[in-house]
Length: 155
Ligand SMILES: CC(C)(COP(=O)(O)OP(=O)(O)OC[C@H]1O[C@@H](n2cnc3c(N)ncnc32)[C@H](O)[C@@H]1OP(=O)(O)O)[C@@H](O)C(=O)NCCC(=O)NCCS
Image (cartoon, rainbow, N blue to C red; front, side, top):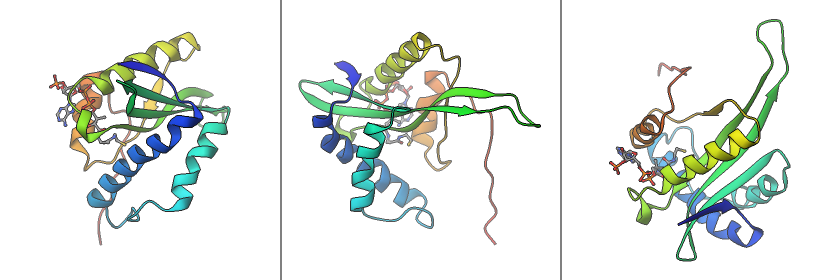
């Protein structure tokens, strides 16, 4: 398996994986996520690809893209409440259903950690939806810890 940054020719396949994540979110949080994968969502991959602050990582096995992640450099200047923050955010992350539990996501995280260190980052952040306990199990075993929570009450 090879992990590398996406080329433009990889983006259609990346969109197939983005749709898998969207479908999962629609089932898990139907009052929030819109079903389907509209042209706007599909085309947004081009915006990500062209943004100098974002990078798309892909995992490739036997010539097939089987996983991807979107990395986003976030910089928030100091304000009266908080110090300056400068970190790498994992915006989107998915391994194709047919390739799960084979170490693909672990290999992507290892690649991302190494690259982030080389770039001078000291912190990687991500957020996830609480219903997605499979993702939580993966992220925790990969070494991520919860540092903040969103809570809700249906009324
Ligand atoms: C979460 C996800 C990325 C994990 O990818 P993966 O390639 O299957 O993960 P790995 O094979 O590297 O898993 C490494 C370890 O993480 C843990 N793990 C991974 N998936 C798990 C699951 N569904 N349930 C429990 N533990 C899990 C296990 O400890 C696993 O080791 P093991 O297989 O030897 O038991 C994948 O299931 C996925 O893409 N899910 C749908 C999209 C998604 O939820 N994305 C993240 C939120 S946006």
